[in-house]
Length: 131
Image (tube, helix red, strand yellow):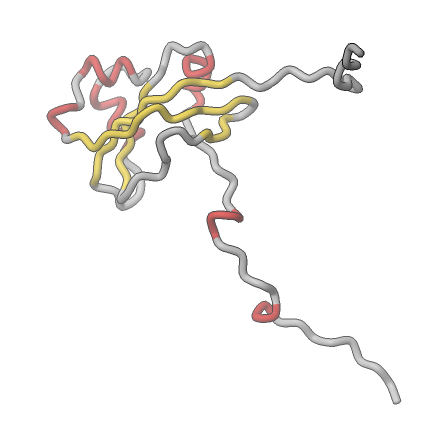
């Protein structure tokens, strides 16, 4: 009698909720990233079908994180040249070229702050407790 290896199909693999599988990132165009890290850019206009971030949550951004302070639905009249510049863009047209991608029609103003990575030294351990 020979033993044959069991054949597995994808249906045999347990399904994991998609939220558990996703790495949570907040993506910025390359030219804005340094301004975000320096704290010069603290808001972003996003055009989405629904909000993709939650207030209080942290999202990876390269080596640090973005912590969302607020998210507010806004309309086109709320997108001013001043808001575009506050978001790191040269003006309205520059912002709208980057903000509009995908099927989204809802506009959100996301306010956030950058959280730098914790500095760890290689081989560093917790200091001994005083007795």
